[in-house]
Image (cartoon, rainbow, N blue to C red):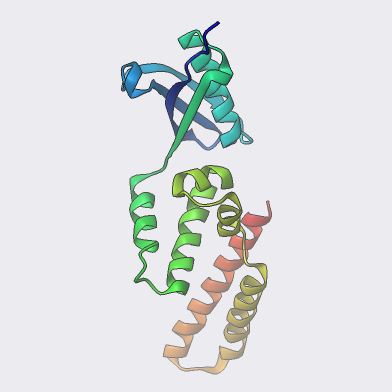
Length: 187
């Protein structure tokens, strides 16, 4: 009895809507390379990377007429080009740590709002799942402090000159934006 040869496929997952992925599966270079083996769409807000890999493995096994355990899957999460460029810029070694963290959180949260899960971001950015989850998590204490400070400045600045009125209006907008962010993240 011969041992079956492992087959490799690459899958590119594209977030087509907030609740669905379209996955294009191609064979390995040894098996024709860029030949599309198949395409499927996965629906549901809970569709995660592990599920995409499992479904890719199952379908590739059917298409290639081998057992699922003989399939190696390399999943690539497709993210918008702008986010990929910004991430590359935010991970440069010459960038100050705090500035890098702020930009990485901003990018992750934008993608999270578009339906990307922590595990999808982990694959897309080649970071651990816990790191991706931390990027998505709101720093509630810092957010509460910023909202409180902005609200206090807005209330205390009632008897200021025109320049102070502009700052007070900005503080009110910042406070409102932060509260909206917090409410959105709580949902």
